[in-house]
Amino acid sequence: MKRLILLTLSSLALIGSSFGQGSRPTDIGASTQPIGDAGIMWYTTWDTALEEAKRSNRPIFFMSAAATCSGISGVF
Amino acid sequence: MFSTKEFIEASREFVCVRLETFENKEHQALVRRILNGRFENTAFCLLAPDGETPLTRSSRSPQNILGAHGRGPSAEPGSNEEVIAAMKEIADDYSPRGKVDEMVLQDFHSFRQALNVASGDQRLLLFVAASPGDVERCRDTLRPVFAHDEIIGRFHLDFGSAATDASWAENVSDTWAKSGYFIIQADAFGQKGKAISQLPLTAGKSDIAKALLDANRLFAETEERKVYSSHVAEGRSENIFFENEIPYGEDHDGDGEVDTRRSGKGKGKGKG
View 1 (cartoon, chains in turn cyan, purple):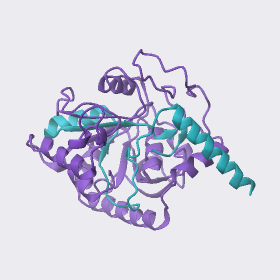
View 2 (spheres, rainbow over the protein chains, first blue to last red):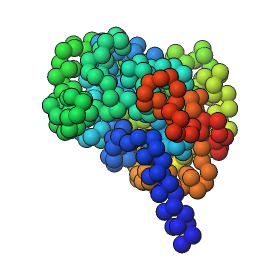
View 3 (cartoon, rainbow over the protein chains, first blue to last red):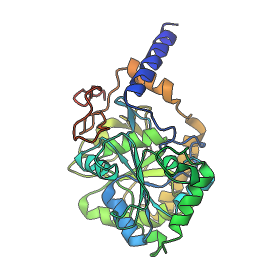
View 4 (tube, rainbow over the protein chains, first blue to last red):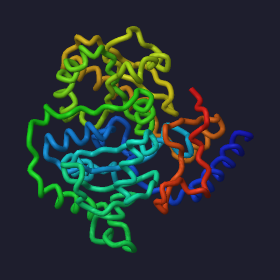
């Protein structure tokens, strides 16, 4: 019960902080597909992406996103 | 949208790059360039292969820009179908060249970041711990592996660097060697991991591919998708914090300073 209350309070705090940061896009790369399925092949440094774009003559789909929420890691 | 088969297929016509916004000054500068001086935690734009020429306006997500309804500052976001159609129209202007199995491989600036991103995406991470003299040979081995239909888009890949990753093994359990190919499952908060498979640097393409597919099969059977709100709530209760080089915060007016109504936490100390 204590844990449930704590989680609820934390969730409310999260909503508050999200408003403070402006709206969070609903889809910034986190996947809802089954785990293990093929997704987007992301490059994660600019240098490698640019080198590959020049090599393959493909346009660049650029995104930046934080793999944290209010400093809490492990989530997009 | 990013999870649909149609979008993923359309994305293959592009070089998709997703930078961690707060990772370092280089990323911050790039985000500011894309967002015309502003700094926000998400940014999106399509660029020509030269990396300089914008092919679309910039915004926080593709839906805000691509598709008939996505154009214009006050328009409704584009639907998935419209976004995909607009992407295909742009990709059709380019003729891809070069062999797929000669592609540049993914890499990260640090193992620490790779582990966190793998956790966020809930993908396995292949970490290559090799001396500088062995790394190029490893890249040659891995290029055709990571171009294969059954591998592409299912894993993250990081090559260790002596400069940033000397202590990588301290945060990974079940390793039996200092060098090799390590298939790592990140923990929920991406600050620790465990090696669920490892191969020597002499391993061949087929052995690596088999190990990846076997590990992915097991991972798919045992891992559950995170729920964003409860993950963050749990992180708060456990005092989890991941420090990046750039303090958290946004600069919506593009004056070069993080907006003062928010308090950045970039100076805090992380767990793990």
